[in-house]
Image (cartoon, rainbow, N blue to C red; front, side, top):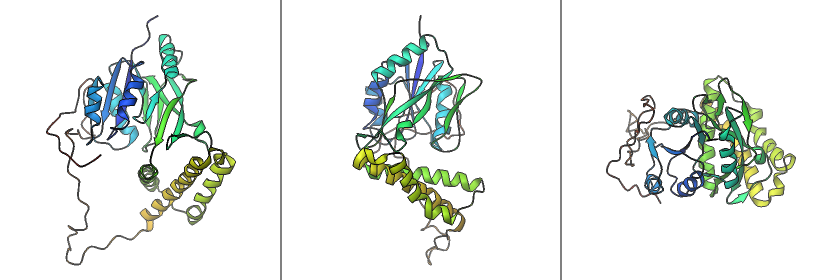
Length: 305
């Protein structure tokens, strides 16, 4: 029996160190590879084209769910698999997906992730239970939520689970992971603020230590050695950072303007110029399925590695 055709969607930005291996890992299962780029200024797009990506589409990034919901309808196949650039489809997972799509019993599938931090597998602290709904019928699945942790919901369908895992190389560098946590905290605090959620002194003081004890002791993070200690500490810091940013939104004082700059021109942040050759479509401009919004212009060197 012929299996259902599958589009693999890879959302990315500045992933030159990941994109090649990611593309190689998804090729055995993909009938189409759709790269959804949000403004790469490094060699990501060049590498993708050399590796034979089917199509590249580009648009500004708002948040993860919004960006992926824009990309999903542009898939040409009736099934889609979402794979981030720092993830890898193993041979065992690819075989399982191919078998499932020969006669699908469900309309969507949860896939567990095998997570790595600085190249070390994290087996405890809660990371071992990480699971995402990534394989689904294109016309039934959409992300719900306004943060980077939005999840897919299947409309009127049945959902199953796959046995084999995605490999997820969360971060090779602690500073890069801190930048990711900063972005996540900013988005989550803004959502809470718009919902009217108030900051709490008790949570601000206690959430970090309690979260560390939960992940390091109760969830056995100490069994992962030094990488586990770092993961638990960073998880605790992320919990604190969300509360600190929420407090700032309510009670933080505005930075004063320079005395000689009453209009705020010097203190106002400057919008960075578009360094990429990919002229991004605005999120409000929806494209028809199958079209590409990536128009390559003269490339500019922004000094990135």
